[in-house]
Length: 295
Image 1 (cartoon, rainbow, N blue to C red):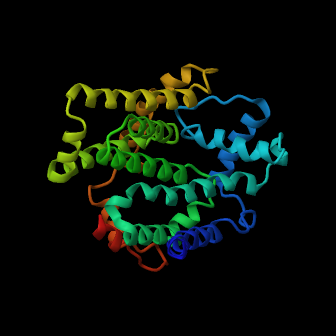
Image 2 (cartoon, one colour; image 1 turned 90 degrees about the vertical axis):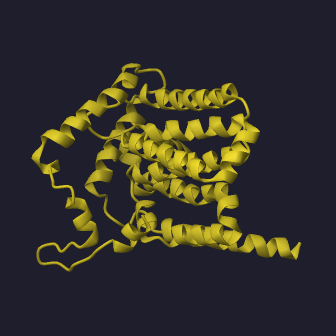
């Protein structure tokens, strides 16, 4: 019993530390413009009870809909009554959930690796900051972690619950921000390479799912779950069916915006240069070489 208490002490300490870095004084910092834009969108949903996805701006609807939960729980029914805490508690929750989802990688990381990864996430300045910031990024990270965690659970023990749950997270990911397609595409490529190069994982998967038809049924369940969840959000829970079409039409908008406007036209090394060495006018030089190195 004492040993179990000791084993549980470290995870609880890490989660407490993460919460202490994310929760206090959520209302102290003034709302950033990006936060205010999403707050106004949420205010319309709260007061009018209707949300319509805009394929040109503002990204997906999950942030708005999940904010209804703390608003309802705190008895706020008008935009004027909504405060910073009500809004920012949403990214706090999903930032904490991102840490908990690391448990899905316990077989890959081991206990010490899992605790270290959780500690790094808990202490990360970027993760702590954006977990207090009312925009989609923290939700995007959380749902990405959910897909990865369920994917690894499926690789070790293929079961329909894992393929379905991975699909749910993928659907939430797509309903959060359009760039989810890049994340899911990168996951698919990385997963294929990992399975191809790892005999142990490939053998386990082949033994657990011997029939190609069974494997296809898992893939179908994943896709159906993802489409159902994202469709519910983009259609404003079936009250605005056109939102589903707009969810795919938006890619043409972003392709046009990314290729036809001069502020997005740069040489191939532009962002790499800024990550490795960047000095703003009159400022100090900085770089993200460590991150590039790990990548």
